[in-house]
Length: 229
Image (cartoon, rainbow, N blue to C red; front, side, top):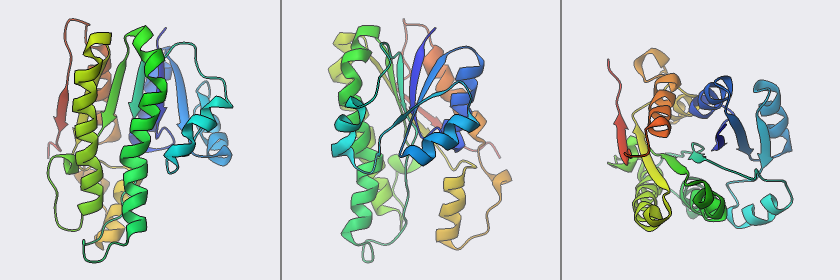
């Protein structure tokens, strides 16, 4: 059975995806930020194995993973975790830029680098859950959109580099999705939150599964998902 390593499995899209992969009999490994979150995820997702590594500190991921037992085989690495902190360019201090770039861009690059040897052996797949902000930036979204535009560039370069090893690379660009992150975004925007207006995490998880389950004679490189209402 295939083994999948997922970031952001504690809530939203990542939690739904981890549950669906587990329920169909796949092995699932969740990377979480600390021991407290590890306990929460283990309780919420029985049967899912948990590793600890803080994406906000990409430079420490290698050390953190070296202290834990990684799977012998990884068939897919799925980057779902992300943070968003809105603000105009005139108002955003460096710390808020650095946090979003670290979690949304540098950490996925570093985690991918660390796991590429195993993914090459399995001819696995890397999925980056990006955002509509990775295609177009709007006022107030500069730092987040910059991190997501960078994530798109990372995926495109990686795809070209790893084709010779049989590793597939997919970027998913969901529109606004009904997740706890979206609720926080609405708080930052000062707007009322109505989950019924947005894509469900289940729908985004379905698009990820479609990319993962595609036969090896084809590859989904980029997939944009928008609300249907």
